[in-house]
Length: 190
Image 1 (cartoon, helix red, strand yellow):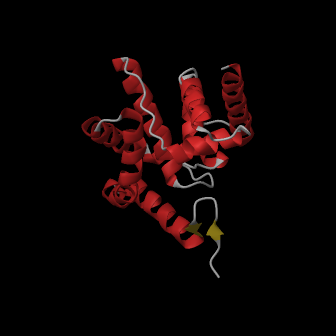
Image 2 (cartoon, rainbow, N blue to C red; image 1 turned 90 degrees about the horizontal axis):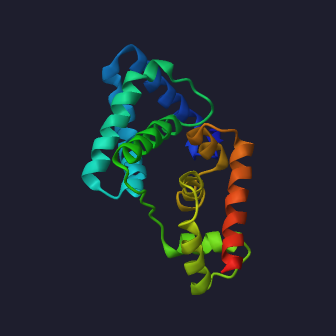
């Protein structure tokens, strides 16, 4: 029976195969194409959800893969998929874009995801509480909103969130708890 990385739903052989692609890319950059093909759509979606523009997303994805190829020699496996490293690069590209263009961030979510966050705050998922949550989210700092988005709207594990944000897993959990408490306090004030 194959072992499975339950956190990312990858078999041990899939992880080994990905690691062999990475090592091959370190020797011959033309081998990077397999990683590009595997992760392009995933990284594109991640960026598009944050910038809300297809053409801009394509440009930023291109930057992500160019930078990852240029830095592939520095990559080391840390028990999470290669995609976590790509998400770090994508996050930096998005932040750089927002800083240099002074544009506001886009957040994509649906009503089910909002109800899940309200439920996490031990509140009923009435329309009124959903509206209060949205109002409260407007008051979050960009870093808090990003954490909420990764955890609840993208369903990332704390391990993956910690890798992307380059913080410890325990720190990610504490920060998420504080964001939920802040939102709960904002809802109760309203």
